[in-house]
Amino acid sequence: MAWRICLQRSTIGNVLTSCSHRNTFTLNTQQRCGFRKAPRKTEVKKGEMEEGWSKQTEPIEGAAQRKGYTPQVEPPVLHIPQRSFGRLLKPLVFTVGFTGCSFAAAAIWQYESLKSRVQSYFDEVRADWLEKLAGNNIRKQVNQWWNSLSEGQRTVTGIIGLNVLVFCCWRVPSLQRAMITYFTSNPASKALCFPMILSTFSHYSLFHMAANMYVLWSFSSSIVSLLGPEQFIAVYLSAGVISTFVSYLAKTATGRLGPSLGASGAIMAVLAAVCTKMPEAKLAIIFLPMFTFTAGNALKAIVAMDTAGLVLGWKLFDHAAHLGGALFGIWYVAFGHDLIWKNREPLVKIWHEMRTKGPGGGGGGGGDGGGGGAEGGAGSY
Image 1 (cartoon, helix red, strand yellow):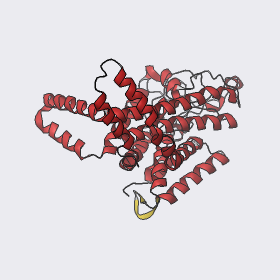
Image 2: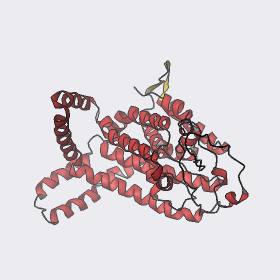
Image 3: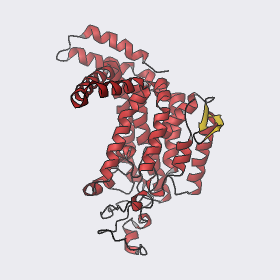
């Protein structure tokens, strides 16, 4: 198998302390002016600890400080007492509801064959735009590149684009307060639900984003050929929310409250699903191609390391989110596919009846054929 394990463990293993997602990361709220260096951080006051921010006031290191860029925002007010599990009821309901809606939307998407329609539309728009911009040569090159991609690589291109867009938003000072509130997940924050999915597309460090997107790109062909694009999107989004909820549980139980961000939880689900379904596939480290190991052994090592990190209280990564994503990926290919995806026919029939009985529902005959296609599940195992 062509996967390179390096950037899941090597790059993600070396990712900056402040920017791992589900790494606990904290923003230095000290303002900077001009090109003067900011004074060293003073000791934390007890009053700050009462506001829930004391343990999270370590300055960002690495990329942010090397570039001399520090978000100029006040620390958000935290509203949760330690070990208050009652506040997690709302995130739990959101997790269950969002997961159900994701798979329902994926089933309807497959039934309606939106993939081919949307793809055809964007192909025409892209061709017209490129032709006006620079003529046929660039258009041919882009078309050749796009056609050379696998279905999985085309599917994750949109995910990568969203991550790049959110990364750019982190660079806009006026957006810092909104980014911290909605694009980092923290059980102590006032906003609990929407950050559970938005933080899955959020990276503060360029290195962290590049590492995660490389791993996603490497596994994209395998996971989409295994599940199909519609089911993959549902699994990816659900894994992001579920891994965040597991992180909420661990942070609340230990009292180590702090914001997290990144796609690592969702990507761990993708990695675990592929390794579980193809345990004998050979993997290699990109910088050490002479050393190979099976996907099954790689998954065991990753799960063991994250379990140790959770038990021993390692703070470099959000090990609970990693474990949550990995366990969801393992569960889904072992049981979830049969339990959820293969039982979607009643929903598809309800949708078909709504489509045929609604306004303009004269195309009932074509809908029956679509329902049969949905039952087969293109690309699904």
